Image (cartoon, rainbow, N blue to C red; front, side, top):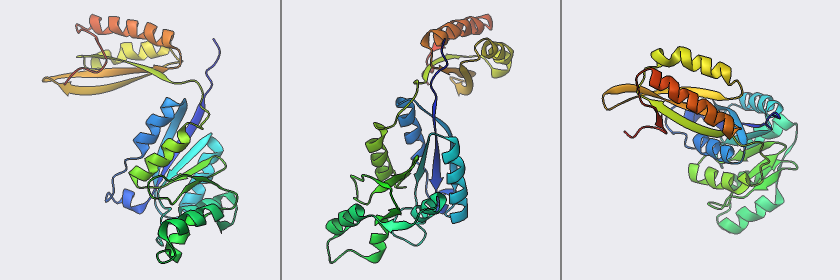
Length: 253
């Protein structure tokens, strides 16, 4: 069996408002789901402040390690929107007025309403490619393997949907869930042995409390459906040996 083709990504959520708890992030999960659909594995998601040095260092670390990096937040018109300038610094490029972005904003706002602050949203690292914003016009951009998206969920998600189809993924990660009303402590040894027998798979245990009973859902993930199904059959037997009936999928609450 050949090794699966693996394409990786990371998501960088930028913003003091996220870290303070004032704003709830709704983008990481959305992007993660979309990446899974196209065969890209999300290795990690990070939350960092609006601090230039932190953005520069983190972007440079992640773009060297992952095939794709997605940032959200910090590309608006106010003084604390420093993501574009920080990305430019990370790449060692000047931040310049993108002529297409400038025209989009001037046409959208009109001569009486275009301001210097709004034109800040038309600045990108030199050589960047624009990412369309079908919601509020002001674009995101791509430079190298870094995709810079807005932070507002509706806009971020629309931007991501526009580029998702162009991403070159690897082998898709498949999954199957088997649940049972068994305690994690009771199944832990057998579950660990099952994982050892299937090193190419990832087997995760997620406990729950339903109908007044403790149990767990066991998610098996990998790229080989036959192997996933074989391990699931063994997991069924393990759960039955513990006196419970295995359930395919998550149990109904």
